[in-house]
Every structure is written in structure tokens, then in C-alpha cells.
Length: 253
Image (tube, rainbow, N blue to C red; front, side, top):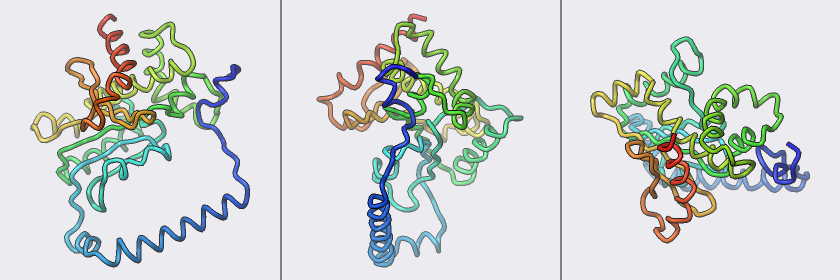
């Protein structure tokens, strides 16, 4: 990475002084006390979950980005959902000899076969450090092997569909392609195949647009993105522009 715009891209290491660390720990302790003194002790929710077991309604896959807090964004309560978060929320097609695939299929099987979950959400987001690291070809030797393994083909596809895009624009297009490729990858997993064939699963591939505060839902049947939950129709044209352009490129190719 050499240009100025690349300096703010990818996974940036932000320094904090001792005072900031102290304040953070104080807030962490305060928040922990509040949770156990009010939300936990003053309700019967946890006692009920312990006595009756967990019966989550949905499964959410998301990026480990600290701004992508799925539980808060969807208004989830204790016991509502199973949540799995990884760097970039990147997925590879199923391979029975690959440990990452075996792990993911086990997670999916627990959710779909054991817990009977009917709704699966795969949530990517804009300004993703993983996407920007790949788009800017950032040198992070302990992170890049994983990103190249699970996201390398998606990057190649994005460049082929958008040969003129560079820097931030390429990263935004890559984020959109990640949503599509993640959806296709999920379809290859045995647990998902069985659940879909038995009509007991609905998949929601989403892109969280941080700038406009909305979700875009990908519709594989026509390659288009529309707003999920109709959060604010006034920003629909803004947040859908790049997504629609990219999906049109898919049809052209």
C-alpha cells in the first residue's frame, strides 16, 4: 500500500494511552454490574433458559468487526439466536477434507438439524477491514493467508467484473461480491442442502451499509439488492446504487 487513501484502509492498529485503557475497563466493569444487577437478576429470562434450555429462532453469521454488533442491530435478547463471527464473514464452498468446512458444517448442523432453526442470516458490512485489506493488497502476514484462502477467488471475480475500479471503490464492490459468494458457498453445505430440500430454511444474505444505517438484502433470483425491513426508504437510491451497478455487471458477464 503506497497511496494516501490506503493509509486509512484495512485493519488499522489504533494506539490508546493508559488513561483510555483505564476508562474502558471502568466502563466494562460498570456495564457488567448493571447487566447482572438489573437485566439478569430482576427477570426470569435466564432462569427460564436454564430450566428449559435454549430454543433460538435464527442463526446469524457476521464479521468480527466491532461496529457490526448483530445482537444489537437486530434487537435480539438472550436465547434468541446463535451467532458466529469471523474475519470478513468469508466462507469457502464445502470440502469434506477441509477443517474449516468441517467446522462450519458442524455449526450449521447444530443450528438446522439439532435446534431446528428456520432462519439463517449472513451479514456482511461496508467499510470492511477484510475487504479493504484485499483490495489494497495490504501486507499483513498473519492475516493475509486466511483472507487469500477464503476471499482470494472473490477478489479475482470482483476485479474481472469491475476492471476499472481501484482502491475504496474496489473494496465496496468486493463487499457486495462477498455477500453473493457467501450465499453460494452456504448452498454447498450438506446441512443447508438438506434443510432447503425439506423446505425448513430461509436464507437472508445481507449487507449492512454503515454510512446510511440500513441493510441491503441480496436476491439471488434476479441479482438485485433491496432494503431489508424498510428502515428508511429515503436513502434507498443512495445505498442501492453501487449494488445495482455491480449486479448489472454480473448479468453482462
